[in-house]
Length: 198
Image (spheres, rainbow, N blue to C red):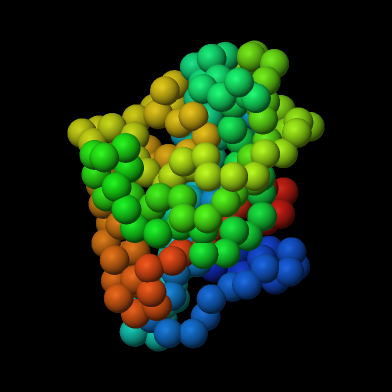
């Protein structure tokens, strides 16, 4: 999948088909949508985070290179005894809020319990036929390097949703701040799989 495959219409159709909400009322009412591609072995930023919203009544779409999967380092060295966290696809309503990631910089931080698969076989391939663990795991939406666009995930994600480009991330946070002033501090995050858009 490439960026140009992702459109507002395709996102709306996919979410509607899956029975999820798609926010269309008012400016800066953000649809934050992670798209997990089918490659479950890559250690690169081969997924996307799309943000669809209206600006002065017209649709806008930002699509950022990201990862929705943990990096290979954490797949092989899980932080949790149960295994590495892999966020379960679905619409997670009101699960994020603006906050500080690891005490360092503003990001979207987990505000409600989230379900994760616990991949515990310590290889480089992500497995989703694993037990689901629902709780406060610190699954945040943040960036990789503050200085350059990262190419490899490695330690940047132990289960978080991570944007590769710091400039994209800064703009994303600006959108979240605008939205929070209008609709409150909680954000819905919807994670879908590539096949849901095809």
